[in-house]
Image (cartoon, rainbow, N blue to C red):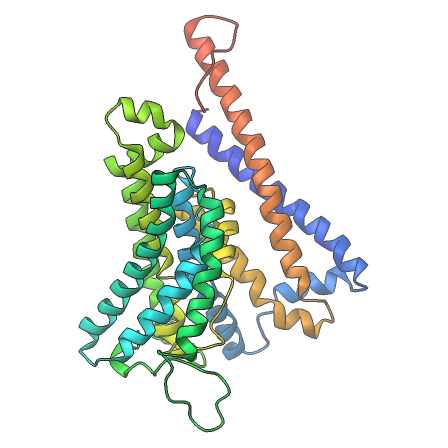
Length: 379
């Protein structure tokens, strides 16, 4: 069997075993909560009794997956270079509030206004990620510590801005505080026509976010950059062995800055699907925690865009079940337990399968060299 196929099958088998074990462990937690595991798992697949309800459930799941996918991509860029950008949470929140405010200050054709908002969000996220990058290459500050501390600054700065200089008019009866409403030219077109093509009813609310297309293009573009360009090779080489990379002509410090800025720029886009597709403003109810969930999604997807997409869909599938679980008298906290257990087990099985694949390659190399002793192969 080819080495690549063997490694892929091992990875798939490890993920399947991890998910099965996660279901078993979650069943114990459900029983401990006094609920029926059968009812709980039936609720996960309860998309509704009518066609419109099913369409709404699918739309909710896909809309949830879009920011999770972008968050996973942002974290994965750092992981590819052994950098832990824990600051994605703060980067996307600060970028979202600034981009929402800037987008509300002018009116232009959609083909101008939407790209400007996207560029502003990416620039703010990238510039904020530049701070821990400079601290790391300049003073050797660990990026985990610096990004965690910068998260607190960014989150509270965003809260100050939306309540202070960026605050917009609040209609009577509205409880949330928000930036000024974006003009209609900044509303990203939805993808409801996909459902209508199949004779299905359009989903409620803002519908299927059109930013899904941007996320797909972003994933393809990032895969090309990381897997098919010199820049991607330099990032991986610098992460594996900075000294060897330096000896081959790569500047590891430059790669640290480049990787962190790219990670931050992608992180800046996380909040845009919600702002451009649904709320059309940054408000005090803006979705939190996507940056931290992105870490789990990236780990589950093994830092590969395709794997991250699957992980984002899995997490979105689980999150969507909160409503059906409550109707089945199952605590929604079961979802968090399942997500945590799945990530933990997948990380463990990834390490096991990686070692198994490495041993197989060592034995394969030994056979080719005509020796019985396994040949050491770099991971």
